[in-house]
Length: 380
Ligand SMILES: Cc1cc2nc3c(=O)[nH]c(=O)nc-3n(C[C@H](O)[C@H](O)[C@H](O)COP(=O)(O)OP(=O)(O)OC[C@H]3O[C@@H](n4cnc5c(N)ncnc54)[C@H](O)[C@@H]3O)c2cc1C
Image 1 (cartoon, helix red, strand yellow):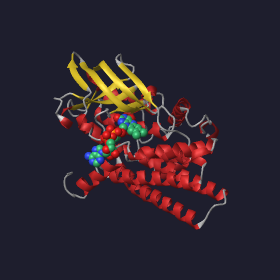
Image 2 (tube, protein in one colour):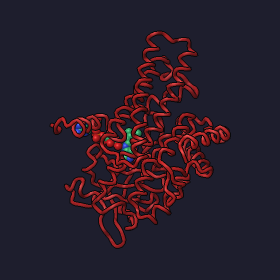
Image 3 (spheres, helix red, strand yellow):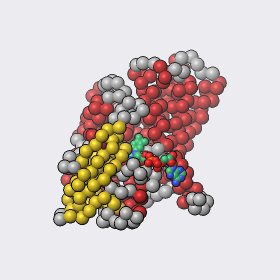
Image 4 (cartoon, helix red, strand yellow):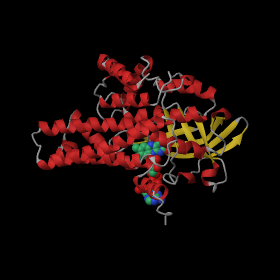
């Protein structure tokens, strides 16, 4: 299917089903409502076929270019129809599991994820291993028919809604760094897994501390090679920075348009306001130009790598500039106002602070650009 025809058919379908797909207003903090609505939208897209394009037939897809997935998320985010963060998990974890799991396992487990019937999560970070992920210590020990996992993770997004978790474990010696890490696909309802949700500053229970106490994981759940989990982790990051960032860029563009409307309605388009929104638009367009190129490289089958750190730096800067500017140009709205618009600005403003942390911090991205792309020498 060519992308133009696909987009035309998709937008016609979205227009025709707008009532069913538009999220009911439940308050910005209602995670349960967000997740239920997200699942409905994914199910409707899957049943109509749009949610199956861009995915291989072996996992219930209809084939075609990954560009088709980029278009679906872009249109959904332009219209504000589903939680972009929940959607991220599919774009990040499904391609990785398809690539690294035995084919019969992904054929069985991926379809319910694509249909929105299941949620999956990513168990990488630990209290003492975030940026320095290669020092993680959650251990998987070999046993009859699989592994026994014990240890702690933190910041695992959406675990309370999840059925599966892509988990990084230590299988080598404690000091084996990236060479002794193994990736496993774990059922979240396995005996021995407990978690304690953490509230974000925008009042949502987005993520959790997770404890693994002698959790049995069958050997068929190995992703890639034993001790080859670093490769799995490194492959996830470019996915995170391609399609999902394109989706988020559409969300930022929509919120930029909202800002223009609200500042105009307030009758406050001074020269300095115009200059400020101009700077924001430049940032958003710089990111979207770069990201467009990344989508095409992915669609051509190119291996994405460390150069996607540039996409991460650009989207972080666009997102934080947009919501900082909203705070300046809508005085008091984020701090004091009530109602749907104010709650949305407040949520987006507070969440934008996380953009320079998740998926690799701003400092780490700049280190990568300096050392690996510009060859400016080792870290001192
Ligand atoms: C909204 C959100 C969702 C998340 N979801 C998940 C998830 O689903 N699964 C998951 O596994 N993790 C998740 N994370 C965790 C995220 O991946 C980590 O927070 C991130 O990798 C940073 O690790 P850290 O928090 O341990 O900070 P640290 O690594 O301790 O960094 C602290 C500070 O030191 C700086 N720093 C560290 N090392 C260097 C260096 N070498 N040079 C310069 N500066 C340095 C960092 O930039 C940062 O400013 C999420 C985080 C957020 C905010």
